[in-house]
Image (cartoon, rainbow, N blue to C red; front, top):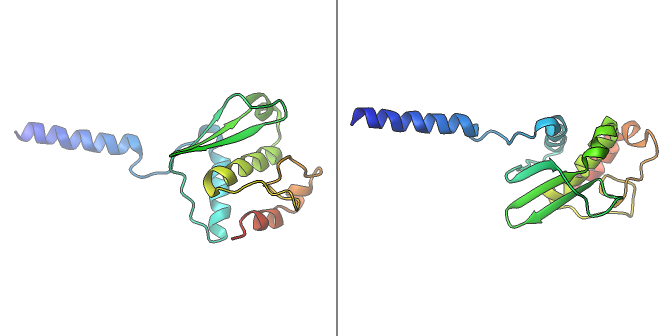
Length: 143
């Protein structure tokens, strides 16, 4: 009986190690952007849940789209166009992934009344986002 009980404990410990024991999900090559997004949110008083969020490469609904978010039941799936991602610079990657995280994590809609991360289309002139990143993030994380 002790042997079986010991095996149960070993199995439970192994399961906790495999699942990360409550650790945030891993996002592969997207992790630095996700971590940065969570950090920026935290600086502004947001405690974000990434439960159920996945990020992967896949098909887009149109040639113009480079990212999309699917919100359905407990699914919060971000899909990015791989060909675009592989050629985009860090600035564009951040804006697009922050945009999709805005949809999938914060349930934000498109906002086209001012230049911001949640615009339907990427409208930032070259350098605008990076030169005014703090402002754009403050706008994005307004309550």
